[in-house]
Image (cartoon, rainbow, N blue to C red; front, side):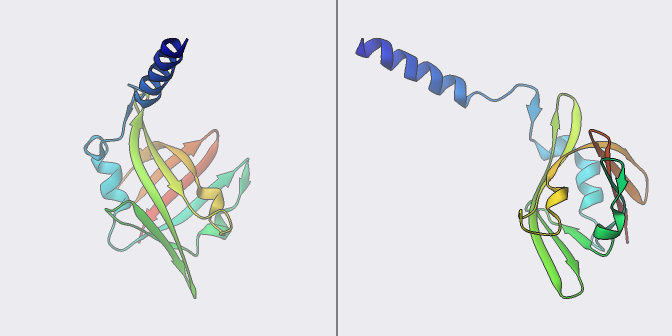
Length: 137
């Protein structure tokens, strides 16, 4: 019985350590998105639509600074909010994962955002119909 329990525990441990083969967290796979986000002058949000409601005005005052170490800082007059981000590929789609403190004004941005499009000045993401757009300063 002890051998059976040991084999079961070992099997569960091995399976839980295996990564999903469709997820590739290597930043080299997403250089243009990372390069855009890491704009030295910062980014603003000119469009944020959540559940069909335009909530842009809540986020447009913030200047977002994405750093190479995976941190993002959002600043506006007399306020600075720190979070984290990661750009990765999952199921052949580029995603931006952002996390801000749950008690902050930016908690609604904490999500996995799917890359939609990019041009010289803007980059757009989607999450189940919600739209997030960043624009260079």
